[in-house]
Image 1 (cartoon, rainbow, N blue to C red):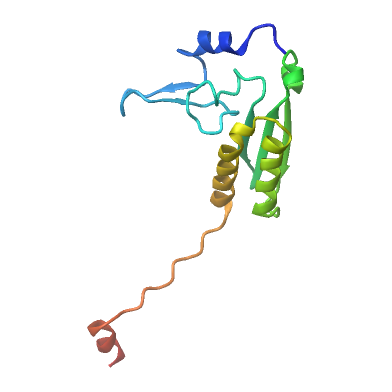
Image 2: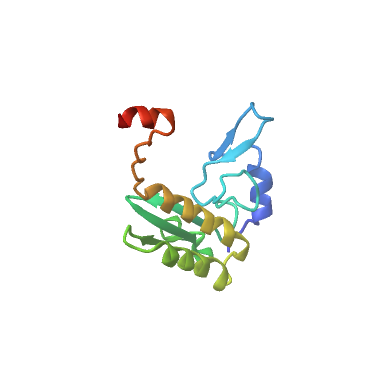
Length: 148
């Protein structure tokens, strides 16, 4: 545990920090670039640098990488994160099950389980090769004309 509470850190860094991305358009919405933020929303619940326990799902070279923050190593930034990588051959179900197990089943931020699985799913879907669209068939009068 750190010597400063997470609420105090959030109240100090709420208005300005290096991860904050403010947009004047769309009603002044605020986003976050924190790698341990699953939804990229600037809020106390999702910010990884504020919370003692945080989860991040990131894209690696054709793989999905799960990063968790160790609450016992707050004073050691180099060893404060545990990383698990799932390669391209790992099935989607295995990745989702592992992400859900590391978030909710171990009692580690169960409130972020759905967001973590959704982000892993989006990353896995973006890495999948897309099929070419089939050639369109001509119908009706154009088909009759082409057949003659």
